[in-house]
Structure formats: C-alpha cells, structure tokens
Figure 1 (tube, helix red, strand yellow):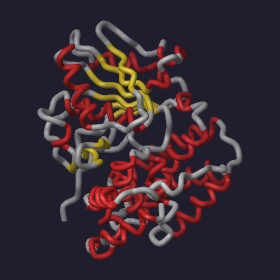
Figure 2 (cartoon, helix red, strand yellow):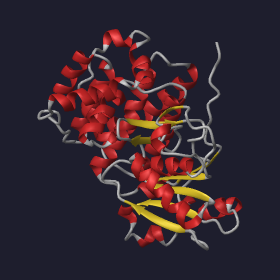
Figure 3 (cartoon, helix red, strand yellow):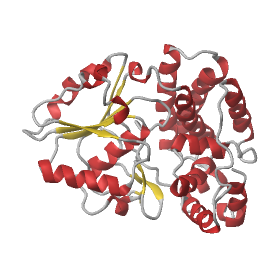
Length: 358
C-alpha cells in the first residue's frame, strides 16, 4: 500500500495583531518590481482600520471582490488575464477574507503559472506546475480554506475544487482580531462548515489516526463554542479559528462526506453559499450521522438560527437532474461516506428524494 505525501502550510503566524507583520513576512518574496496583489472582500472597502494597514509598495494593488456569489472559473480566468496584461508577472497573491476570497486567491495564484482555463484543473491532482507565491489571511473562521489543498470553484458543468499539492497556501496569518464583529448568522453557518467537516471525517471510511486526532480536537472546540457557551466573546473567536484549522487538517488526510457532496449539487443549481448549503443538507442526514445531526439541531435551537427550508420546492426535473449529476460526480466524498459500493447505496432516485426534503 502506498500512502499519500500530502502538503501542509509551511509557515503560519498566529496572534492578535499579527496582521501587521504581513509586510515583514512578504518582503523576502518580492521579485524586483513585480507587485503583490491583495484580493480583499469588498465588505472591508470602506473600513480604513484594515485597509490602511495593508503594506502596499511600488505597483502593489488591492482588488476588492464581491462575494455575493462564490468563486467561478470564468472569474478566476478573467482576473489572471487582467493581471498578466497589466503586470506580466506578480510577486504573489494575498487573500484577505472568508473562504470564497481564500479559494479565489489560491486559484488565481495557480493560474498565473498554469496554461489554459481553470476549468481544466477542476478535479484531483490535475495541476502540474507550482503557482505564484500565495498567502491566506482569514477574516472569518470555519471553512478550513486557510489550510486545505483545494480551491472550490463553480464551472460551466460542475462545482469542484482545484485539488492539488500546489493549491495549499505558502503562508497563513491567523489574527483573531480580524474576525471580531462578524454577524451571528454568518458566524454560525461558517462554523457549521467546520463542525460538519469533523463529523464527516470522523465517520468516514478514509479515517485514520492522523485525521482523527485533528477532527476530534476540532469537534471538541466547536461543541464548546456552540453548545457550552451562551455568549460570543474573544475566546469564541480564538477557539473557532483554531477549530477551523484543525477541521481543515482533518479532511486533508481524509475527506468530507454526504453533506458536502449533496450541497455541491445544490450550490451549482441554486447558488446557495457553502456554509448555508451544508447546514440545509446536514439538517436531514440523521440516517448517516445521527449523533452529529442531533447536536446540530441543539446548536440551531441554542443560537436561535433560522435555517432556510423548502429551497428545492420549486425545482424542475431538469434542475433536480443537474443537482444529482453534480453531486454523484463527487466520487471520493461518497466513497469516504458510504464505502466502495456507494453507488449501490446512493442511487439517483434516493438522492432525488433527499433533495425533495430540503
């Protein structure tokens, strides 16, 4: 048996105020006059308290990105083309934001050095050339995008990540001060992405001692934040930031499962955001993750969260078929969840009935 030699983020700095070390961190990576490009969630565009601290030099550029929609392959390709036309090459790409911004930064960094369209690289281990130097700075916790080896994109035919050894960030900056003041619902749904990572990893057929150690710790921290605490405070921010890191590490050497596979189909057709979509799906997965779903329901009640319902009520047969095809295309996720005979267990008809409940 041959074991995978997975990459990990080689450098990470953690601490309140560590954002102010970015200039020092990236200085050795500057390549002549080639700029650093900062992709920043546009919710920060008018927040001088953050923007004025971005260490711009020379031709460095900030690009504010709207994340109403999750990253698309055509968006990645367009940004790559614009940067190449304006600068030729870059010293690096820095993403400051949530999971969508981090995935966008990883994808554009890869496409600066890989030919063609990002559509060609949706899948596993299709990227063959290291990307531009790239740094991830999360401003919300839960997605695990800061540590994962994927950059999830919606393409013309599927929602699927650029899963490769070259996708992982070269540097991550974890500053809990950046996540302060996030909206309650956003905190919850993004945190549930992390919690669901743990449940799917810990109950999967790919589970091993490596992924289990990270998954158990992440689940413990999620439960402390969402079940044992009654108020959100600085400790909550710090704990969820590390739960996100550990949850991402858990699935790095394992895999996610039913919730993610089903939500990918839903997101492709209906545009549901990742954390919300996972929560909608997980709400109905008591047959697959009974203990995890029971605790999830308790978290929903405790934090008084209004979970969207009937999102598939008006879907056409064509839309259901597209969702089913996209979802069943996520073979590694289904194999982790249900085993090698997963196609006998999760038939298109059974998946259709599951979508109809949502």
